[in-house]
Image (cartoon, rainbow, N blue to C red; front, side):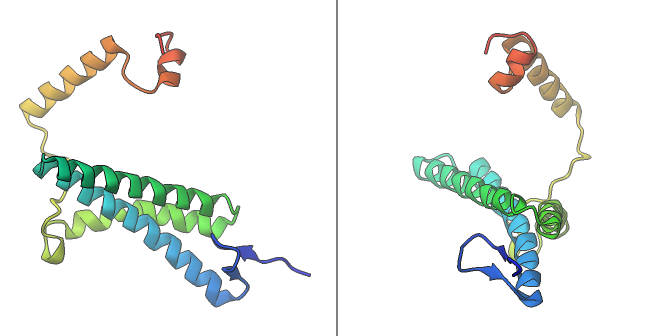
Length: 150
């Protein structure tokens, strides 16, 4: 008797090659969707500052977190194929958004342009680093590991 992998729900048993291939494609698409949702949330947070907009932004953040935990559950099935497909989706998401950002139906998403390193961004970035160094920025466990108060 061979036991088959269960994909998220007990009724979703991957007992055929087609179902397993579908689960792998689903894992890739889920990873890409996480990045897409995160990009929309970032854009929405930049443009709107109303209480409703903040509620939508936080809700989208919660959805992103929920989907990330679903990816974690896929990885915890100990299926190498699902693990690699999950990572592939999370890696492909930013690439796809970079390629289509600002075009067609994705025109509301600004393509990230990491090579826009101006004097202003360097100054702001350096000030932030100095502030975090003095205030002990980061997670409590990281600050404790550095000998700072948590």
